[in-house]
Image (cartoon, rainbow, N blue to C red; front, side, top):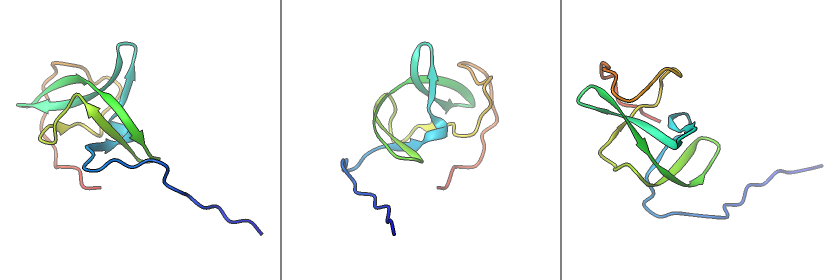
Length: 89
């Protein structure tokens, strides 16, 4: 008989986290895209601890930023968008 146990090895208090699918690994580095006045803005970010579903953002965005979570691969800086509902994990 076998049992799989997960033991947290790291922990961040008051961490800013985003869903993994919001992270873009590009040739210019790691970034997220945010909606600013219905225009897409690319934000380079520094990541920290990650889980299967979320990534800690250490630097690059603030808690007030509207991070774009669901988007196709053609998302790019400067395109106009319509604002969708807020993501609820």
